[in-house]
Image (cartoon, rainbow over all chains, first blue to last red; front, side, top):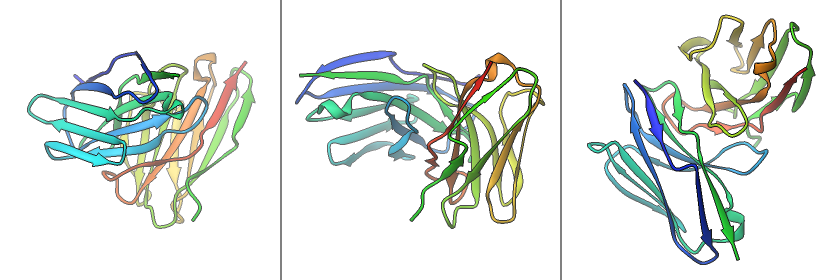
Length: 109
Length: 112
């Protein structure tokens, strides 16, 4: 079967660090993506991991462990504008992106 | 550079009607995928086309169909609309099917 799990909601305060976890079980694996989606808007690309390890891009980092079927997105120095839904997606065998249900992050001052 | 463009942005249809949604990929991208996103859920894969051929199909009924044209633009067709088809329909393009996908702004379909 195919399953991607991530927490439904998270809250944090401005300036803090938050880690959003994602676990996956898919029949194929060709990379894991993280997308940010503000309400009513299209998803925008944040990161892509295909090999194990940490990828850092500014305030955002993403980690992948293929053997554990696990990834996380780390957001540092949180800002109010980071309030959004964060989608974990696995590219399955070069075709479909299989998405989790998304994690709604609320950042308060 | 223009991103992925979709039309229309909003659409209201009646149950039983047919709808056609359109997508133009980023210039140079040959792969187009369609996703359905119901409120509060992640996008669900409907179709992928690469070089005008269907490369993947999600778990959607035969009422859903799509095609890709020689200029790599794409159409998604839905027949016999149901209330449950109300959703945001997203188109994503990529250079090849397995690389980073860029999403359009989506078409918000409401079936009444």
